[in-house]
Image 1 (cartoon, helix red, strand yellow):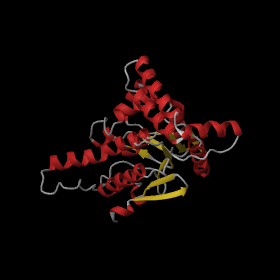
Image 2: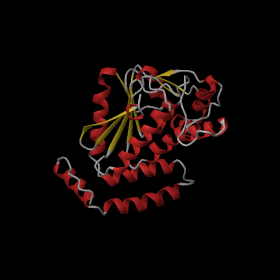
Image 3: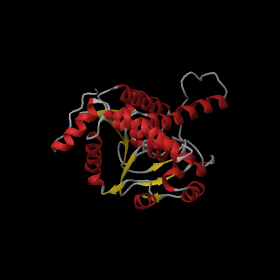
Image 4: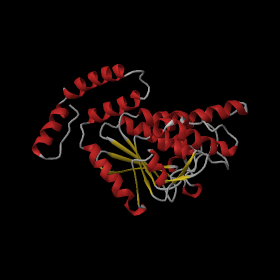
Length: 270
C-alpha cells in the first residue's frame, strides 16, 4: 500500500475535511505510511482557508488499534542510523501528530466508529469534540505491550478530560472500557447507535459552522491554553484580548446580524 492510500481525505460538504485512517485490515494500526500521510492531510487542512472543520474517523470497523506491532517502518531520513535513533525518530513522528491535531487552528471532531487503543485513544483525546458509536471500545494499551503506560501525550490529555484518579486507573491497568463508560467519565460528548453516528457528527458540524471562523479558532486556542494557564486572572486577560480581536471582524457582525434575523450566516473571512 502506498503512503497516499493509508489515509483517505474527502470533502463531504463545503468547509468540511473528512480524514479517514485507511488500513482497515489492521484496524487502522499506525505505521510509517499512515503517520506520514496523516501529517500531510492535517497540514493541507490547516493551510486551506476554506476548510473550517476537520472530522477524523477510521475506515472499516475500527478507529485505530494503535501501533502496528507487525511492523511499523521507519521515520524518513533514518536509514543507516542505530536502532535507538530510528526508534526515537519514529516515536517523534507519531507523537507530533497528537500535537498537530491539538494545534490545528480549527476544530477537530473524532468520529469514533470502533476500537480506539493506544495511538487511537491518544488521537481521540487530542480532538476537540469526541463522538462515538455505542459499539466503540477504548484502552490505553501501552503498558500491556511492555512499554510505559504514558505515551503520545495521554499522560497529559487523559487526566484533563476524565480526572487524575480515573486516568491513573485506566493507564496502570490498560483495561478496556466501552462507549457508555467513556461518555459517563467525560471522554466523549456523546455515544450513539452506529447507524446514527454520521448524522450525529453532522449535527455537531452544523453547530460549528454557524460560528464565525475567527471565533472558532480563538475559542479552541483559549480552551486548550486554559488547561495550562496558572490562574483565573491569566485566563481572563487572554479572553479579553480574544474578545476584542474577534468582535472587530466583519464576520462577527455577520454572525450577530444572522442571529437577530434568524438566518444562516455567510462568512467572508473579513
